[in-house]
Length: 101
Image (cartoon, rainbow, N blue to C red):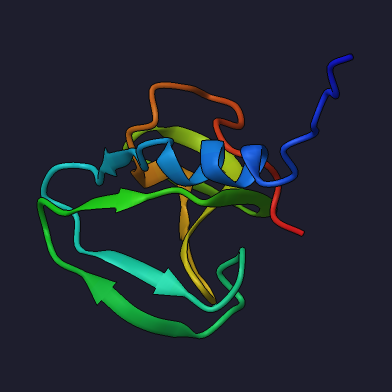
């Protein structure tokens, strides 16, 4: 008689081993990082030219026209740090990451 075991940590390990992808910020741009998904949120820092950023999740917010078009998608690059997707080369006009909760 065999017993099938459910590995409760399999999903966690799978997510942890998935390589985090970094995306280029538009060339020649020093990008404002805001505390929330919109231009009404305070700037928390400014990213230097030539940087790449991770995108952990994405949220709808203020519409922005930038180097890669016009969008209301905001990329969460760290805890409490958002940048407009209009300046991040994700290769898509839509969502490429889960929505932030």
